[in-house]
Image 1 (cartoon, rainbow, N blue to C red):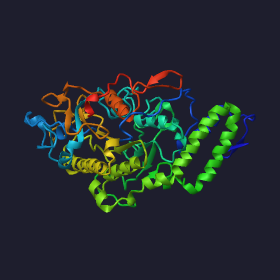
Image 2 (cartoon, helix red, strand yellow):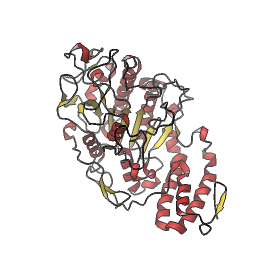
Image 3 (cartoon, one colour):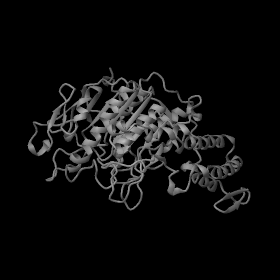
Image 4 (cartoon, rainbow, N blue to C red):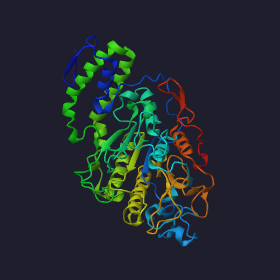
Amino acid sequence: MLHILGRRQTVCDGLTRRELIQAGGAGLLGLSLPKVLQAEAAPSFSGGRAKSVIFLHLFGGPSQLESFDMKPGAPADIRGPFKPIASRTPGLQICEHLRRTAQVSDKMCVVRTMTHPYNDHSGAGHYLQTGHPWHIPIGGGFNATPKDWPSMGSVVEYLGQRVPGGLKRDLPNYAVVPNSLGRLQEFAYRLVRPGEYAGWLGKGYDPLTTAIEKRDAQDDPYYRNCTDEELTFEIEGLVKNTGLTLNRMDARKSLLEQFSAQQHVVDGDRAVAEYDQFQQRALALVASEKTRQALDIRRESDKLRDNYGRHLFGQSTLIARRLVEAGVRFVTVQWDSPTGYGWDSHVNSKDLLDNLLPKFDQSLSALLTDLDERGLLDETLVVALGEMGRTPKPTPSWGRGHWSTLFPAVLAGAGIRGGVTYGTSDKDAAYPVERASSPEDLAATIYYALGIDPELQFKDAQGRPSSIVQGGRVLHELFG
């Protein structure tokens, strides 16, 4: 007998396969009954310099002209209000508000020629995090769908679960902090921005995601210091307002066991075994002492926390370092826009001056220094970028619009050559002139660093072979 939401039904009394699947979709942490992908055994990681990736995603699109591709010789109506300063990289002048980053530029490479045609946030964000263009037309929606391409982190999770003992790990292979992208954005409904999820690969490969609340609709925790009471980094699905805590796990597990028992009758042992694997893995991760310790920011010294910055991006970047040090393979840090534009600076450059540039400068420089001092930089690939750049022509108040045909990326660690630049742009920082680099190239390069063959193919839900990257070129020139 199956008890779901107060109904007593048996399979022979009319409980349909669809209802069983819907019941599974209401299960722990949103895990739905897995699609049997019929994927062949996937090869494991091998030969890569990177054991882990920290992906710093600056949602909204930082301006190339106010960061790493300044044009001091351009006309006054293009070059911007900020002055360039020298860095430790020969020939690289960067913004005066990135002074700490200038002092560690010998640890990183600046790619100045990222480019793609998706001039909207959702399409571009999906493209940058997956290496695949989004299937939704520009302007066709904001939210993730089950048809989306899997993120790079989800591919890592998929492969990580298939190595010997992978499903018994007490840490995820893929995590997103401090929130899923869009969770804090103020709209009439909650946004689930595409890009960070497993898409057609299946919910069992979605990231472990934490949740941090903001104080009210006008609050932006990226712009201010946060208290320890706020920085709980609780696993999303276990946050207090859901009422689901570790003390209630046994009751929820009992419901899932009832579902699994009935599903044996409908789908047979193979599908149930795969579902049970994902269910048990979810339970293990949320109950894992190792995961909880890695997410406890209070275990770090006050001095180091101050170095990263007590704002949400700084503390989340430090959590990312803690996670990769513990053994997580791919961590995305989302810099979201809780109150409006953020990095999407259409209106003016005040937020860049007061918050965005100095806080990014503080956190990135602290991360590179911290990883280096701990001996982790050689085995951790750090990637920092937005999903697009900004228009060369500003608004009258020195804001800039969307501009996807040119924007910068910073890469460091895991064999990346430090103190170099890659690619050149035209005189107005509008288009690549030499060595244009696509999201496919970036994804192929990240996979290569991890020891994953960029030409690897999975079988999708329809049994068709699908490449994890289509047409991307590994940027071998970035590696020493």
